[in-house]
Image 1: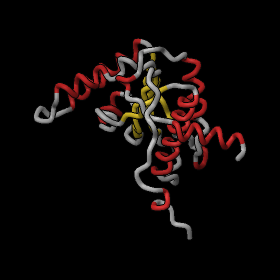
Image 2: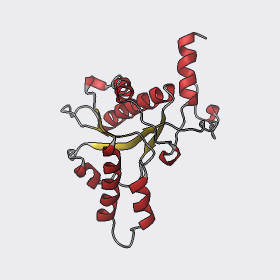
Image 3: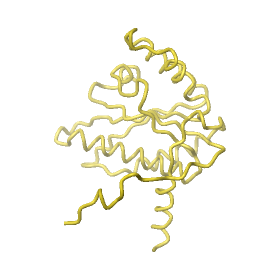
Length: 194
């Protein structure tokens, strides 16, 4: 097995999700986050549309984003569905994270490119970023809860109607090693050789 393949395989197999409350609050140098964004920028893209976009929150902006996220939940949730504990969870979600990145697909001006392909390209960019984080020993969490997919989030971020938020990425460091990985469905059940 060639060495590069072995290294890439190790990073892919050992990438894990770390929930933000399990992060330790240590700051990631902005330069490393920029390096991760450079990796994201090398995702595959049909017709060179490069639809991935990231809004980066660092320092005091992390808590501000979480506070705004919680308030958005409170404002947009009907009273019968509102849960005070969810509000509190959203408010403190990033307390131990170093950076928060909102990842979204910005729809380009080529209507012949299917939206699904633009979402897939943006997802690949996110995966590049997460794999890079893992290689640097940075813990990560790709969150889709709270108001991530709600139209009000898109509006609060000043995105266009056709843009789609794909998640909220929390980056930080964690003291404890990631848990062992597992797959429930055997690969042979997912692949059919023709």
